[in-house]
Picture 1 (cartoon, rainbow, N blue to C red):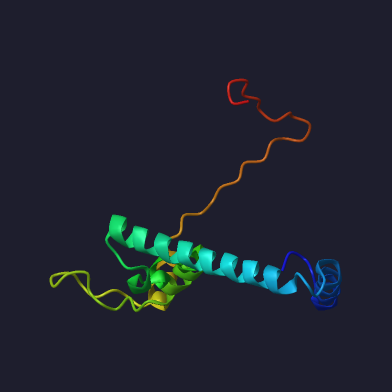
Picture 2 (cartoon, rainbow, N blue to C red):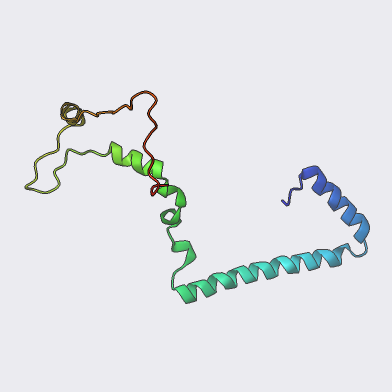
Length: 131
């Protein structure tokens, strides 16, 4: 509560009681009760106004649908990778191959990467339009 811990709150409460005094304490507690009632009334009025303008009741909204944590890219990718890929895309499409078979097939047909090395002492080519 505003960075105030328990002992500090009790100290402020005792100081407030001493400053207000026992004669004015009932008056101030009544004012505090009225403020709390007014805030509650304003909150319920805002709820009713939202219900009238938007047309939905706040209690009926599925808030889990709007939780931003459900859009975590790591979770989405993890779920996509763990999905069962053995279902055919359409009735005429062939069934998918297992992941191990696909990995070995890709390893067999992978193109060989050729790396050219410059002779020793020759500067690297410079493209003035690329920088």
